[in-house]
Image 1 (cartoon, rainbow over the protein chains, first blue to last red):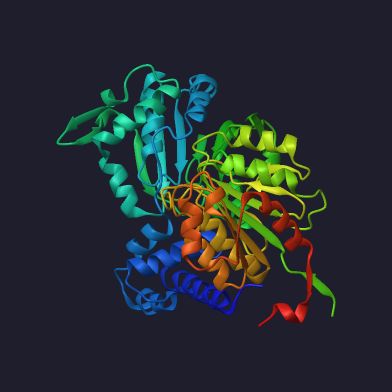
Image 2: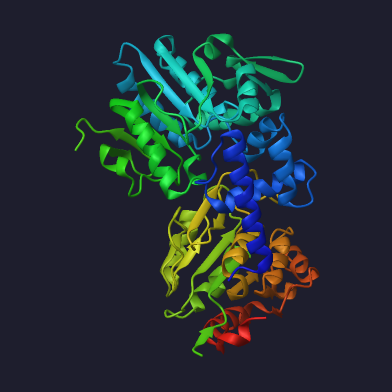
Length: 279
Length: 201
């Protein structure tokens, strides 16, 4: 049995979730509780609140608080070419199929600060496909997306990502896609021009266009089963016939209603293909 | 009043020297252990598969990587996947997180201990083994605050002493025991019963 203290904290988190939904229109009620509780506690610390319930007046009355809330509750963690073998498989097995289409839309959901969208753009450029691609990188965290849109990283990060880039099958250098100066690296405009950063909430927003590939990694792990099912349904509805779905390396289609629309391309790497027929 | 086991779940944390310690402890747990055993070991970025497959060969209990949204079942040993935090949800299912490192570690022991304390409260046994930093100490305090039991490896028998020493320094440890005793202590705590009313304040 949880202690009295733990039960109190659970009530506090529920109240914060209700305030956010009713006051700001962001519904976190189907987020998985264990991580949400940590992030709400972190938000209280960030805003100098001694207890979680001290957040309530701020959430209800402070007009300018939403960006801070969304930044803290959707902690942006992302890297370029995280899990390089996944990107290698996309490069080797998915891009040759995508190459046969005249135009391509790719949806990267939960893009945070954009490193994964940059990685995709680089691979598409190297495959000679970028000119016909539009990448939609979406998130609920506008502050992270503003950073993504700038395309500026600390230069030493690029050096750190070179290894992952090579493991992902890269044969050039990552640095050549950035202009370096003053300790920073700026993503080349010719790559960034093919990425549109847009606000989209997987909980409440719907299909916005037909896409040939959805890449959404380490986002579903923060959702409970019902929200995972909802989001997988959204991906399925957005994908064209024969489109590809890439999930995080520990995420599954599980028993979701959308599962039977997909066949695994690589079970280990969580790459799936939308089957021809709906059944 | 029907007796209930004192311990309903075991969580184990370790780092440097942890794999050898786990190989010492886990194969000694009996095949009919009535609780789940959940392990966070800082193994570095990838070798969890190898690690759990070697354990699988030597253990009487089934060993597997903790499955996202799967339920922690009695008589199973679950290992946190590499490069994800492992947390417990109230319905005793596993949750993974790609949040930043905590105590310079992912998975972090603190996150497993704290979230498991929230789920099992006084029914939780937390075991802190060898390791070279203080991850797990804050979590052990939470376990204690929720009424759970805390067992720490005697630093004199640990490959790296910082982690058990940090756990002992919190004052939360119910037992400090040499490596050789730990499997036996876990087993006896998981099998001993107490009248239900005695477990409640």
